[in-house]
Image (cartoon, rainbow, N blue to C red; front, side):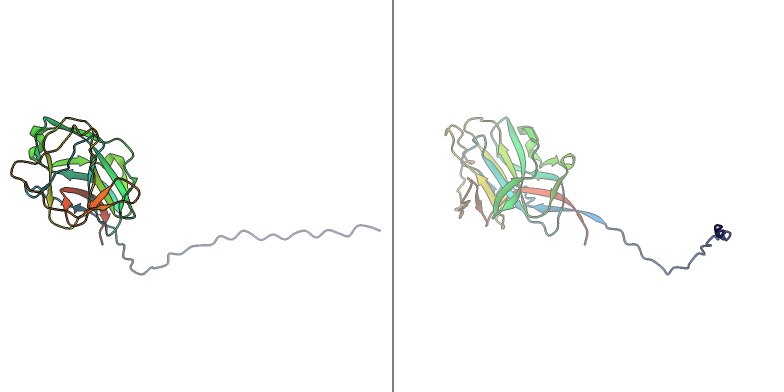
Length: 218
């Protein structure tokens, strides 16, 4: 039996779709605008002021920063109201809040400054843009004493407005007592102690520390 003839496939010449422009309606493009906001306490006042009991290395003094929306922390600033030392050695800390007190560190790098007393007449501004610190919620900016310098006087500008103000103010060896200027009377503050750390806070007083945050404008 002979083989059946094989039918050849019929091919058509290729067709090319021709795309024609379709008119579109007007499109409105809205760009997000970035805005700097200064949060915290920007007081440069000589009075009122805050002074810790001890300038012991490791002690810290911080200000709560309230954010309505997240953003990049670009700078922090503070003002020293009085200083009897020739210079100060401070470290900058940024913390997330945990149960109302400083928690996880948001600035793990060591950012420290040496400030001569002559430079303290003006507000101290520190650029933190190289560290790319992202704040997703409320935070605390704090200053840590790095070097023991004996007893003296160190005060920071403050204000009688809601903080909170956060402190670790431990006596250590007791050799680094901090004395306020003459004639100063301390107003009582109601302190709340953290249940898990040595931090304390006062909600009716604020320290002269502020933060410049870059946010998307509403």
